[in-house]
Image (cartoon, rainbow, N blue to C red):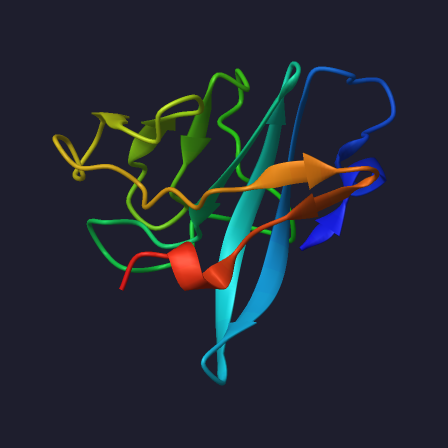
Length: 116
C-alpha cells in the first residue's frame, strides 16, 4: 500500500494519516492509512453517513485538536483507534476497517480479505 516512511510527518512522530489509492477488482479505492503511536490502522475513505471521502484536502483527515478523523462533508467525527463515530450525523456507525500489517518498511494489505 505504502512505505512506512510515508507516515512520518516532520514534527509529529505519533500521529499521521495518508490517503492511499488501491486498485481492487479494477476499481480505484481510497484508503486512509493512519499511524497512531506505534499502531498502524487503515479504513476505507468513505463516511458511512454520506459515502463521501473524509479528507478536506490531500492527506488532511484530523479535526483541529487532532483527536478524531473528521468527515469534511458534514462533520462526523470518528475515533482514530476504532473508526466508530463519536459525534455527528454518522452516530452509531463506523468507518470500514481494512486489515494491514507492516512488513519491513512497507504497510501491506491482502485485498482478498477486504469486506465485500
